Length: 285
Image 1 (cartoon, one colour):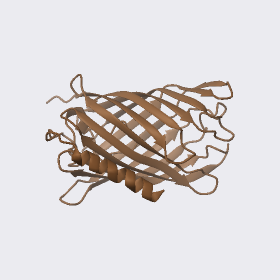
Image 2 (image 1 turned 30 degrees about the vertical axis):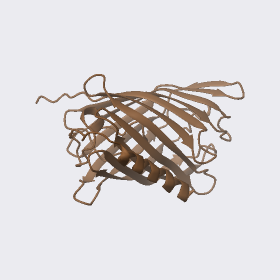
Image 3 (image 1 turned 135 degrees about the horizontal axis):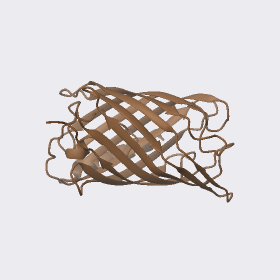
């Protein structure tokens, strides 16, 4: 498993470095990780792995996407089937230098199980705060921390939620290599409702490693391996995601698409994500 993950990440980094592309325009990203330009400087979409960069003052980062997955059987929760999340919306603001406040939630969840039963539910809300504690300096990467809490709106009666809050903390590391490649890594702890038992909670180790490379002046390729692992009855999950991000067609906007594949038998069999991001500025300057 470890060798296969290392091989995937190595291949992604080599592919990004091999792309013949013009130098990136500098972005206004807090933390000195200036990969990207315009809207691309604020996003690490469509990935789950977080960057340490925060929006500039007066900028609000808005995002909405649709995701379709082929989910595995989860005991006591739901059968195998298709899960549609539409739309998943998020907003990020910068109340102070190197600080970001996040809020995200799926507006609706639709599950179409192989047992023929259709389920529908409102998604959980996730609140987060990110702090870019150390800016990138010389050979040292930038580093920060992120705290999250999930508000349990989705009911366990439908099998789409746990009816329990989740609390998490992560260490974030970001490093730019030249003007075309950005590497990001996350690891942390998540205290979550056990998706296979109705009343238990588990402590889960979360991780993610991502590479983002500029293909052209307005197009980027992204890749990540992310997952979680826990003790006792929790089944580890790990998947790989690859996608493209296009800056445009309007100022401070981007469109993105990604596909996901499992690296273990407990993750969704496949996933497709399509979305749009917008970073309007309300600065008086």
